[in-house]
Image (cartoon, rainbow, N blue to C red; front, side, top):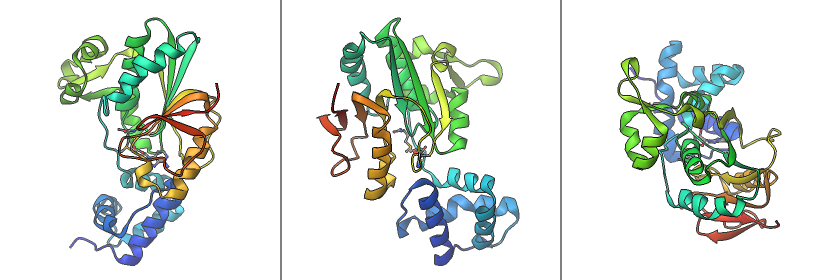
Amino acid sequence: MLPVLSDKEFKGFRQLIFDEAGIHMSDAKKPLVSGRLAKRLAQHGLDTYGAYYQIVSRDAKERQVAVDLLTTNETFFFREPKHFEFLANTIVPALSGQGNIRIWSGACSTGEEPYTLAMTLAQAMGNLRFDILASDISTRVLATAETGLYPVEDAQDIPKPYRTQFCLKGIGSQDGWFLVDHPLRNRIQFEQINLNTTLPEVGLFDVIFLRNVMIYFNPETKREVVSRLMSKLRPGGYFIISHSESLHGVTEQLQMVKPSIYRKQGN
Ligand SMILES: C[S@@+](CC[C@H](N)C(=O)[O-])C[C@H]1O[C@@H](n2cnc3c(N)ncnc32)[C@H](O)[C@@H]1O
């Protein structure tokens, strides 16, 4: 018989993902938690969620596995394409006098967002230089992102000129897959960064993408995360969130340029 997640056990895991990642889960998320953790119980040969919680509490590696399972990682290439149009048509021309453009994709999941950024910049900037930091709390998604290898069906989200220029069709053992071209992969540095804690020294960025992650945070966590990121955005830099998110009451350092596109004051 499948183990049942009690209310008490659910509260334990809910507290854990909040403490670790800042992710707020309502009561409605109980089936999600039991469903996603069930296979770890089976792998450890456990018959209660409480026993699994004990392991997670004392073992940092297993805690990371639980965080990986409890985060939601849905993403795709050229998601919310207006952001990439704005990058190519407005931000790049404005920054073209500068030696190097730095962009941070702050919750990059399996990599489709930073690779979309790299394709957009490579095409818009000609020989100008750029580098991208792509980070996430989940080591599992970062491992996928670093391969740059995706099922061939996912390429349908990539407009044809980019697909032709930057994607290589897999052959042999990689049949059914495509690979993002090597020079583009070289421009991206993948790193595990938890936005819910003090950020590492990463320097200043011209643009920060923080899309489809704040929806999981409560207002206080949102304010803390955005405030940490503000210290990494140069004055005049752009901060881009999803159309389904809002920065209302979150910070006074940003001014809206267009819905979901903000700019930090200063030059
Ligand atoms: C739905 S995906 C968004 C991916 C991409 N930005 C997009 O818009 O398509 C949300 C990502 O946020 C990550 N995440 C959640 N909490 C985080 C935290 N505290 N720090 C860093 N990443 C976090 C998850 O692991 C997940 O990969």
